[in-house]
Length: 366
Image 1 (cartoon, rainbow, N blue to C red):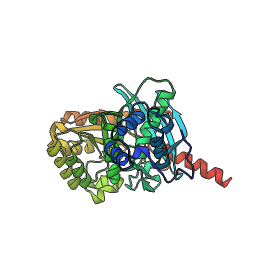
Image 2 (image 1 turned 120 degrees about the horizontal axis):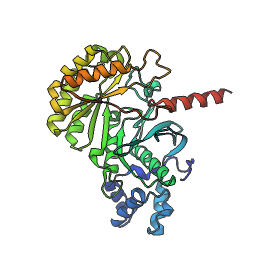
Image 3 (image 1 turned 90 degrees about the horizontal axis):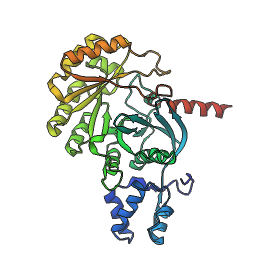
Image 4 (image 1 turned 180 degrees about the vertical axis):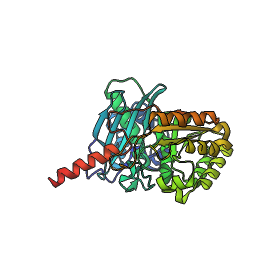
């Protein structure tokens, strides 16, 4: 992997380009159209990490690629591997900012959770991701590079496995970085490259209703998840600031539009916060909220990973989670309690980055 230097800092990453964009770029630089397919296969099928490793390309093309593009815009900082195989990566971007990516070993294959922004402005009061406000959006290439870094890690470990599932649920609000996230999806879906199926990709939003409608109109076949976490406006506005801009009425109007447009199921994520949103009362409210969606609503109950900076929140008891689950099921709402991954490492989203930044700040002062 080439190091990040002042010379390549201002270059775009080759991972920024969709296949049509790469084709157009090569044509405008005097190259034959078929070269795009060759470059694409080197990147996403053979997983090379330097242009000079693309052995069937002519010297003039290698030169023009090297002059105009860098490879991965990420540098590994910390890698944590849990006892269940879950691996969390902290990467440094070219401008020195840091992001997290997580590899999970699921019963259906390997899944990677990617970050879409540096920091987050959504304002969820229980979340480690928002401890640092949004500093910027990630480019499509910076999101793609997270997948490729994980794939390179697997290749280097001699694991004959490929990333087959992707969730855009890391740091940031994906629909606040809509165009770059959509380009990222186009790149990883491409059948001549990584070929990650649309139905193996999930995008999670905290509820930007206007973007949910735009997402529906795109007909991507990609899965949609909603970070709900409360069944009424009063509670949701208290724990999720986004609800003040997009209250449940507007959010569910957009969800109904999405379902009517795509006829696809929606997953609702619900973090179980002790004595906050985990009572049978909230479970019954959630049943009534989701009933109109019939069988196209699916609830994912998530045991909370405590965050030091948010001491007011703790994990719901197993009894509370069980009662909540049973109430939903008895009300005809499909749900599951999410299986936990990586509990013996910095599991909460944003936690590894926050802890590393504290260490760097302390060492600077020292």
